[in-house]
Length: 161
Ligand code: RP5
Image 1 (cartoon, rainbow, N blue to C red):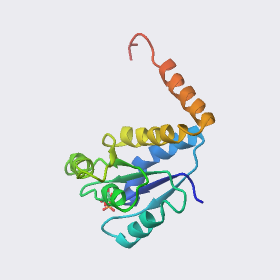
Image 2: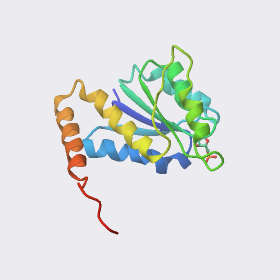
Image 3: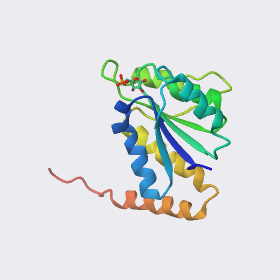
Image 4: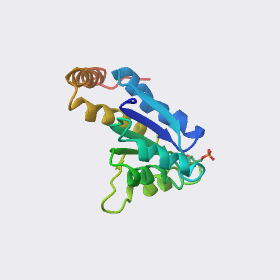
């Protein structure tokens, strides 16, 4: 048995973005692990991770990658554990390359694709928590509280700088 959520990313350079997902899971008390798994540079690691995901008790995989972002899709092809894809913002094409690489999966192997960058990574954490909350009333309550706190933090009127 391992943590229910795995946060994987193609490179160390993805961590500043993917940390947003980890922070959300920390706030909600959801255990997770983090791994660098590159579709291109460490394909055997990708294969092993995907092959063992169900057996290890993983329930959601959050996968971030940039550019030719094949990690989320390849992971989805290797395991039926739901994969949430996070397109990393890139310098050359602003992450549109990442988004298109992740979102256009062929029928049969879905990746739940988030927005480009930090907001997408944070939402991936929230999506993972929402999935786990379906069978975890205590987590469901924490998620409801988190959402209410966010709503309560939004002022009704704009303020001058
Ligand atoms: C992808 O290539 C990674 O997900 C990363 O976003 C991108 C660039 O990687 P580095 O060259 O910074 O290691 O595989």
